[in-house]
Length: 155
Image: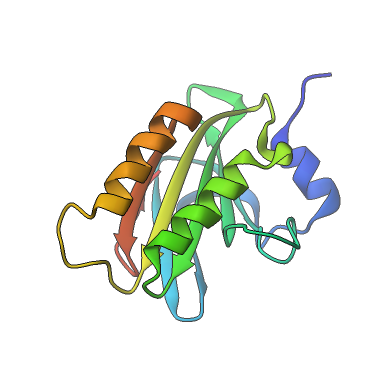
């Protein structure tokens, strides 16, 4: 039987947002808000990673799973770190989570990393973030994107 990341996770953990069709999905922690416009609207769910799926070591806050619109048997994984300002630590947390064996599932066909923060370093092309973007793309085939809290993402 083929693997299914949602089935694997939901058998052990209760989703923060249950699997259903969404056009907009949102989550927040400590006043930092993440909102995604899901285009086209499709099945999605959010899981709490930090303290639930992964209880020790470095890990991100949330995982948004959305069905792959071109193959509904597979998933896109959006790894979300909600941060005040420590972008360097957020990168470490996302990287550690993406590398976790649980997320090396064949049904998880595309990965995205999101840092949602109140503010980012003022220099436009922050070298820490730029180096991480390249590393995430080369090593994990994963797009790393930074967004300010409340700014919507497109999934």
